[in-house]
Image 1 (cartoon, rainbow, N blue to C red):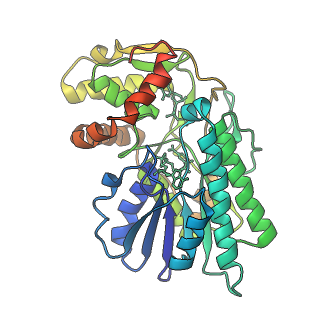
Image 2: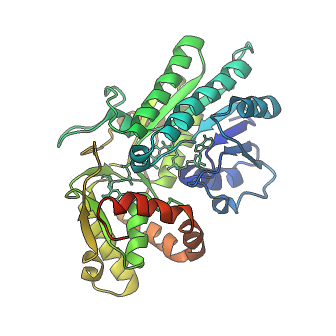
Length: 358
Ligand code: NAD
Ligand code: TYD
């Protein structure tokens, strides 16, 4: 890749900050502009390693405000947009969908408009690319069998997945209608360092360490296909370098697990770390009322990205999980900051109505 100005949206969130930590230091020829609203899910502490590097700058802005987007395009003239920014938690979308519509749909629309206005007037758009980071949840739920392919019909269940589906449709429409060079990636569930502890894996790790209940929705039979976050980041980097505009690539780790089995595995790993019996943690498991519209199973067919771009996951799930547990154990200051204030309010809102002990 030539020297590029790369606008990364949502770079202070979980996946975005892992991406910047991996690629800003190793790509001194590229200039990275991190645009983030700094919602509850963001944390600039995640970016301490890169914040003083000369090829990195941070801008606080809300994508739902077109004037800010326009200003950033005029000032920085990015060649490449990697669009991570979104409201990302299904349970929050159930309790309050409005932010998902503003950030995920209007935010994506504004970004696409910025690209259309600044890129499509030039004769040569070859050097430009809009990479839209999306989710496999747009495909809805699988039964016991089958995998999501790039041809699976969209069938989202939650306000979160519906808002991501809408944003995917807009990106595809801008490619077909205006010729905007765009690629969509649909990835399965990520885990790893810096994940906000509203999501299953960090929530269970931190609750267990604090001897709090481990709230399993329904019977814990839902299945997710887990991918270590750095594998996702490397997949995105591969797609930027080798992907074809107009294409969609599914990204997944071939690591399907029932939620309850995953929670048991976490209990075993934590017990090993802390020299305890796994039952010490297992007895904290509490079955709580299910999530409405809870998708049963997600699983990705990642053969297209493997075959066409040569990417494949590097991290084995049990090793990745141990690394993740270690990271939360090694970063108590990060945990303490993240768990203060608004986090407590969320835990109260989401779990007290389920009858779970806070
Ligand atoms: P996250 O919630 O941890 O971070 C999202 C970031 O976006 C935050 O820093 C937040 O401040 C920022 N943001 C939100 N609204 C914004 C707005 N209006 N303007 C500017 N910034 C805004 O999310 P994540 O887990 O890092 O996910 C990143 C992307 O990857 C999302 O688009 C998500 O849909 C997608 N994705 C996530 C997963 C997963 O398992 N986490 C899997 C597949 C795809
Ligand atoms: P989550 O991490 O919210 O990701 P997503 O809903 O996007 O897949 O949840 C992963 C799975 O874990 C999902 O099936 C819901 C379940 N879950 C629980 O059982 N308990 C919890 O407290 C949370 C947050 C999730």
